[in-house]
Length: 315
Ligand SMILES: [Zn+2]
Image 1 (cartoon, rainbow, N blue to C red):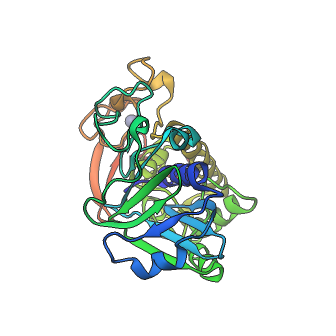
Image 2: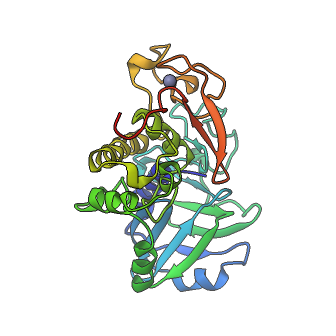
């Protein structure tokens, strides 16, 4: 599932390519036909993210709320103007992975397939919808297709406030009071900190990768209850997430290792050097050499170093 940084990048992408434009909104698949009719022909005013949820606000005050969940993804395409408007390189698809339009146009994993209708040189409007397109947004210069979301609905401003009110603070907003709100929620709970970090009501946007990595970076035992952590430890945890996730928005990927802890100085950071513990089970810890361990916790895989993260809250 994409973590919060990917959804914030998506919001930025929508803001760049569609804000201020009147959009045709449809549901080629039909499942969202009545919702699409409420938004069709309206101007997109702003795009925001909170945690893993995307909110697209239109000038009739209605808001499209989308949660991609495990299988959802957006595709984008358009002419040169459309691609040029994107500050993040017009991602073609954002799910667990993000595919960027290659600046050189080289075909391949990050390129444009030859002859694709997403090729800005030969743009002639959106392609025929393929598969189950829940929502299609079309401007004069480009389009976006949504497939497979967990949630896709039209909300009033009051309903948006309710939806966001159910979520904890988002480290990527880091508004005044957010760090304290996180400390209060986490510090009052006897639940293991590894589970608290995945609870979107405690804080919003963290998924399995940031969870494992920030616990390692903070040398925290994943099973410590939130209530065992001092205010200083909770504040440090929050601040580390703020910094890591901001980097994630900038880079379009999650990199948590410090240069000194990588075996290779290569830039861009190789996939195998980007993390301390995530998907490194059985490999030696970058700090102490102990084998990284893997267990199931809350139906999700938790990666950790039994040596570096063995200690209690006072250590
Ligand atoms: Zn270690």
